[in-house]
Image (spheres, rainbow, N blue to C red):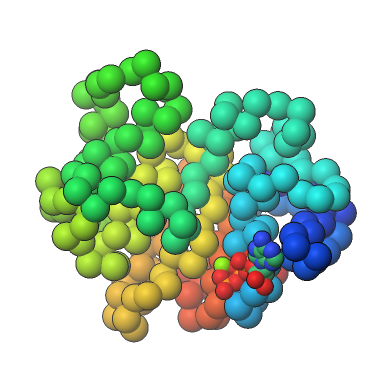
Length: 215
Ligand SMILES: Nc1ncnc2c1ncn2[C@@H]1O[C@H](COP(=O)(O)OP(=O)(O)OP(=O)(O)O)[C@@H](O)[C@H]1O
Ligand SMILES: [Mg+2]
């Protein structure tokens, strides 16, 4: 088994607060994990470390076979799909939904590239379809409901065909029906053997997709 995540004694200290304390954890290829904890437990901090956006105060972070700090994170990040409230806030409300998804590949290929090829658009459309929102591809992101936005963000996270998928409270802010719908979509994703290793952060056990164990 290949380790997708390998944390050794990872701690994060900020402003005198210990946000993470000596976390050692291994996630193998194909595994689905759920991290549950109360507000302020450090879940988002953990995902920031895993997505290479935050360097730990202590410990060693191995992601996709690379030790963070010894490699170019801009090469590593496209291999990681991430959805989070902070990332969603940065999506312009006027952007076309299809472009929200396809532009994930832009970040991978580089800023010099000013247009996407047909294959990129087809993949974006296919992902929107898998997430049940293909009808929305010509709408602007700002006109979507919260549940629709969550689905578009997951499609965007999958656009680069990542080897690791990190979902920070994907069902937050949804009503009961919306949450159930999204959880069943996530279950389909979790059962799919071709889906990447996944870490899902949540507050609620009801948000755990089938096929996921719990940590
Ligand atoms: N720069 C900082 N300085 C001091 N403390 C911080 C800083 N950034 C975050 N924290 C604290 O770290 C703790 C963990 O935050 P984090 O966002 O990881 O929690 P969480 O488990 O994701 O919570 P939630 O469920 O509310 O999203 C919180 O108590 C937060 O106030
Ligand atoms: Mg959080």
